[in-house]
Image 1 (cartoon, rainbow, N blue to C red):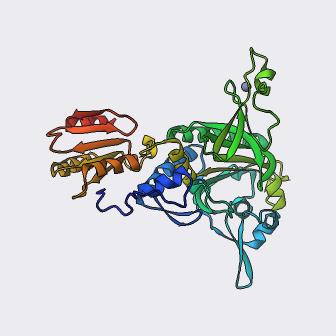
Image 2 (cartoon, rainbow, N blue to C red):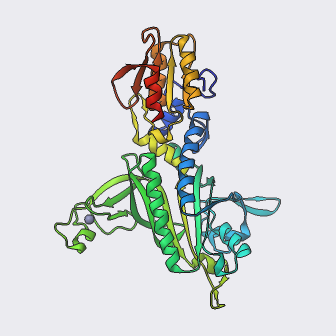
Image 3 (cartoon, helix red, strand yellow):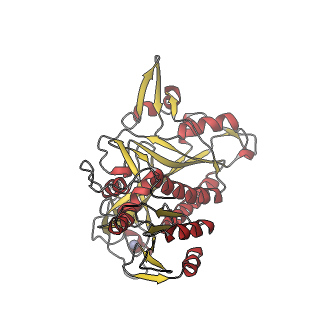
Length: 413
Ligand SMILES: [Zn+2]
């Protein structure tokens, strides 16, 4: 992609009405545009990051046997009345009237999946059902101040599973948990599994995937020696307490509980048969008996992950994208005409490259834009580099002069 042709360029000044690091850097880097508080357009650069994240999530979801679908965002009131959530989730749901009928904009899809299953599934042989989609969610937010970490409208991957036995459900629940950990690892995030409350979804204990960050809105209590971690909504431990899990295990010394700010990257919910009973979704089991299926849902915030990555990986110059989700592999800075040839060679090799081909823009300005945009590798072609190319990684200070051949070889790995 030639930078001169790219829609959405860098902005010098930090936007005055944004307080969060992710919004400031994404707006300045030309990744997003703000329509109103909590509502952003993904510009071409931001869209590419979204596509990379989605693909990682899709691959890991498919490995669990889940199938991709796409469900509607406009829902009739009647379906929400079946579970009572038209009233109980009123605060988070956008509800409105049109031509004397009541509608809601989707903030989740449990009711819709339940309706699908009761129409399409009748026998134990049809289980398990595992469906997911990538779609927009609408949530009424009074304080939308965290950039794309907390929007009124955002992208999410939500998976739903139904099972004929509790055993099969529990097995799959932890399989999805493992898939989540793989996803976060691939993106370069170190996520903790944290026990939490279920909000407008369930009264059961749920599991959140939390990434430690000073800009986080959540507070978690955790042990560094074992996997004990709880959200402040439900925890009974205090900072400095002996870890209840290590103490129980009795093997050596228990560690002390630490407290930290964290950002929620995903969550998984066990509903049991609550929703199937409410919506009268049944199946016939092996013995010919009518049963309610076990139900779970599993969410990952896609646009939120973009925000988390920026909050975690940045410096005073801009973003430092993890390789797997960077919009391009390489940022080529052309300071003479020879750069055109290098650009073509990179394209021929199938390398994703953003080529700063602008004329009349200083080298200093081009380098500053590279640092702000945060693509992992910067290549410079100039009169000074002669027949070599300057190689610099965004996360490092040093530069190297290497041949085109060597450059291509490194990029292929
Ligand atoms: Zn512990």
